[in-house]
Amino acid sequence: VTNKPLARQKAQLFPLSILVDDNEPVLNIKLRTKPEFRGQFIYYYPEDAAEQRVYSEVTFSNNKDKLMKLTLDKTTRTFEKPDQWWTITSSNKVYDHTGIYTIKLVPCPVLESETIYNEPAYTRCIRSDAISLIMELRLQLI
Image (cartoon, rainbow, N blue to C red):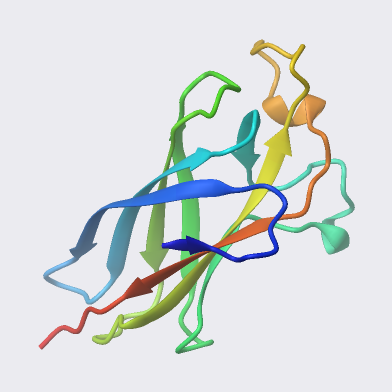
């Protein structure tokens, strides 16, 4: 797993588990991320117009038709490099999951003076470009 070299914000990504359903060849990957900045990752900046939004998402370079869903399952309630748990789920039934997965995350860096409150983190974000993490996977079902 690597960061694309020109990203301003950085992150660590840890694959936790890979599961393929016995009945359907649908892939589920559990991941943990840790930003290397003060803040969290979010799905998108909600104040952006819908047609201009940049989303946290997953793409699969070897098959553009392969649909992938990225879900944020849990976040540690801190801005100090929180652990965040995600699930990637393929929507297509395919038997070859080998390839390069690009995980694009929308960072929400905050000022040192910010603390966690009940309102969503994105209300205090310093806008920043999305970062891309690259994960190579070799998995074929026989």
